Length: 83
Image (tube, rainbow, N blue to C red):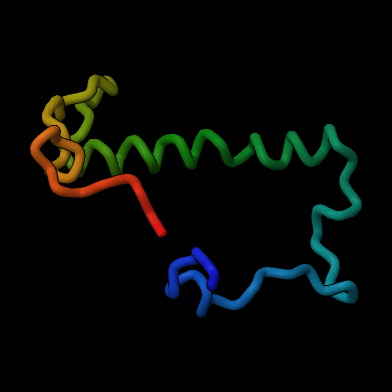
């Protein structure tokens, strides 16, 4: 019996096709790193906007939420044990 949740089991496996080439396949390691880092700033800004909108951080990045979520509190009945 698999310990993988059913929601993950039903997802199709992500496998690279041998006849489908990615535009980044021909890049050198340095070029690939530059390609990945080029979008990093946009991804960080989007994450900051999302966390700010959720009220987790303020505009300067300071964490506003100091209370643990209900499932992480000492009196919670949840567990990290799975399977």
